[in-house]
Length: 632
Image (cartoon, rainbow, N blue to C red; front, side):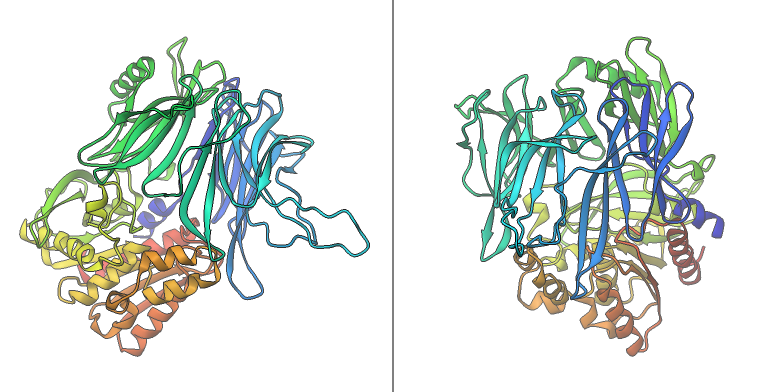
């Protein structure tokens, strides 16, 4: 057990890999001891990688790095702090450094003692390859100052603007003056700002609606593109300078489809892609100028449809060349397009990165994503459907233990988080851990999941919890009726909304499951709304959760006596997705009701629990509970 927990609990060995413009170096975020992470720079010729900067997850987290030229990096660093009222607040900063970690510079506007409000976000990079070497085009957050005693020099700019920033000197020249209600900018990939969004503010609270403006090529004047539109109905994705057009997702017949709109003043739209079963969800870009070469969607498996014949042909060739890891994707390119950074993985293989040379046709393996799992056998995964209580076919992923045929097994129902999310075909460390321990695992795409259109999403998994939880319970019944699982040996495990679903399912169907594991769960819908009241998105959360009988009826915290099986709760105390108060109160309520509950309360980590020791501990205790209740 301990060996399995340590191996599957070890974090990914490679995150956010990028290639230098000349194709000779790579950078990625790699795990270090426990919860530490490091910026790793790789010399492609020698294969030698070395750490140049490290961060402890309590509080700083390294998110990604990318190259500006061949000898300078820009990295994203985040952390979470508590204010004087003990509210958790997320912070984000961009910093640049040399390839040895020296000469660290912050790229956002410098904070001041006189700032009128907290600078939680400092900006983001719009274009990496600016026309001037050593610079990036950034959208930057400006914070005005309060009056300084005895000084007439006070910063007054506020909101989001666009600057060209020198990554060595941090000197900036203004491209777009900051405005308080601007929420985003978008360029054509060649350094030209062509789109901006103005967020809607209602009674000092942000909504999920934006109004968009665009520019003609070569113009500085803004033209209105849309009135205020809901984010779930329209999403700009990319501007392609080669076609002078905007790629956007728009709602059509209840699903997101891909349009291409001309930015020549006509606003003429062309339908690029739609799918009768699922949403189109993104475009694929590559190289200098970030040319759009395809689009993506996820049915049984994620698919990319390439416009570009060269990439379409290459994608198919690589799939044949790497049959055990057929999920091939392009993650970057040298500035001349000759060298391509590629990831290849599979549902039963964590995958690895490669560097492909288009001229020599050499494919060099770089790094294994999960070296701790090397030489292990993984569970077999299949895509299935089962019937919900009302007869609706529910798609799901079924993982069977290595070497097992799927008869009379102990089994786990593993609903995903979100709820507005979904599982996808690919390696899943959590389900594979349970499969390695001898359990069948089913991951239902219950109604309330994202990606299948409005009808499937319903209102959402909280307002429509009875349908969502009913679909999850139907997965357990399918396992039993099909003979895959022993009906007396089924448990339910979930993270985030999945943890909420696990607790709620155990309350509403107390005889169906023999144990519950809930990681970072929502436990009370009214508490979820109340915790958001001091934040700018409180209106969005209030609208999402809603009001009515479902708030109490759909809250596990309100009905702890209904749970009749052992419960394991796991939660970290710097979780800004789901406050740890949800698990604190749930553990106390279960104990007060005389129920069997074990609570692992983790210090200094966020919702993802990115710590080798803590993840291994989570898996060990979950495995121990499941072995005891439904049998290994």
